[in-house]
Length: 352
Image (cartoon, rainbow, N blue to C red; front, side):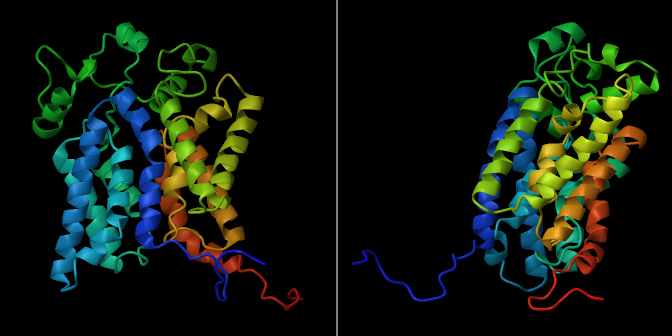
């Protein structure tokens, strides 16, 4: 005798609702977020709270103007996920009004102007970030140095408390007797580009206190956190492996080839993987089901091309990270990729 309740067909698992998927994404962001807060201060949390408040408010306002119910739209948590991803990409001391501008662009222009969730052709969080990066490049690239004692002592830098961070974000005021040079610094990718342009070899660049075990100080731990969160999303099948593996694999292979042939002028592939937004982009941003390719073969192409674009821009372009640009450029190409990678209809032979 078979124990347990009997169920009628079909016996397929019930898919996640949108709000359930978004909630799982929020949970998966926790390890990487904690690492960012630990190394880069309370500004990360303040940015996340501000971005979430602005995003939910903007979405509610648009729904009111369109004469549609507000709660169902806000309740799907998609605006919250957009806000969190956006906040994790901006500097921890970005002025509050720039966070407001970026989120308004992401929610109102990129998402709701095209019809809301399911219709946006671009990833809203990355579109909002690139909008700020192009419009306000200095403010958007002025990151805090990681809170590592050896680095703070070597460069005479200052650690910001919660009140210091809040005051800087809302008023622009620095702590007494403190200059911008003491609270801001280049990211590892930015410093790498600058010093390579000065014809300094990798052996000397790696002596910088900004470098950690495999990536940049602080950044490597945040990347590891986002990797763990991404593996969790894979385990519960919220995302598939195709885009993350192809993106990271493409970035690793290309950077590895150049590193093997000229290690004096190109960093090792693990530096690319564990510095900047590579892990965050691979698992949380490029896998956006609305703006990414949808076929399995198409997702492999989509991810691989993003990795290639990221490597090219990081190596020869004008922006040190480039994950956002890679995602947006391939968002444009996603419909064409899907068109040429459609699976063969069951029972049909290959075209002759």
